[in-house]
Length: 115
Length: 111
Image (cartoon, rainbow over all chains, first blue to last red; front, side, top):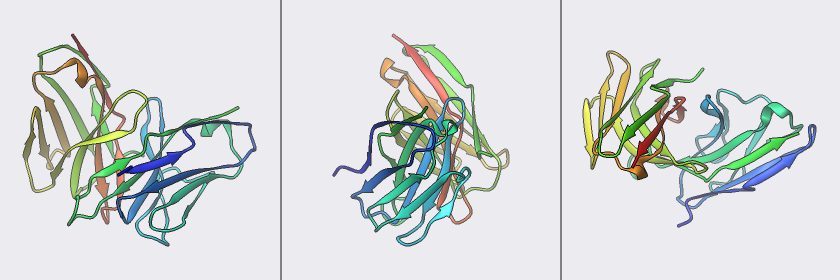
């Protein structure tokens, strides 16, 4: 199994451009997450989706939108990129308590630079 | 604001020594997890401890949880150079669907 796959791995954007980060998981998980990681800040939750068709804001949702396209896919969109959104973005998914428990599985990250 | 905070921020030890890192959190939790992140990679789950547990072992890892102090510690025994990584604690909140990570401890194990 591939686990959690996110694309692209690296992206450079100009201020004001838009882009979508794609994420897919093949573990049949209900819950999916988008985090950003900045130096000295750890990981901060942007949005999450507890199940297909639902999305909720995390700690730092401003400037982002998400779509839970189906059970497998959860995308993150930057409508008008700003330099403050330069970060490493991680997609993650979570198993159910009866199965793999609350373990969160992470993708390998997407490095985004906004110039 | 983030739920968890680890300390120390950075730790450097000799191979074979034990490494201890601590995590403090702010609100009631269902469980606490520890993750490891190698440079340039995603996070990998190490161990989960439930709120009604006080100690848990997995190989060279020992985790303790003190819910009265809202703190946890991760002990890595007989460290190896391959243990060099950043370590994060994660706590869940509310319904258990939201997970919040601390700022991490950067561990360097010197061969």
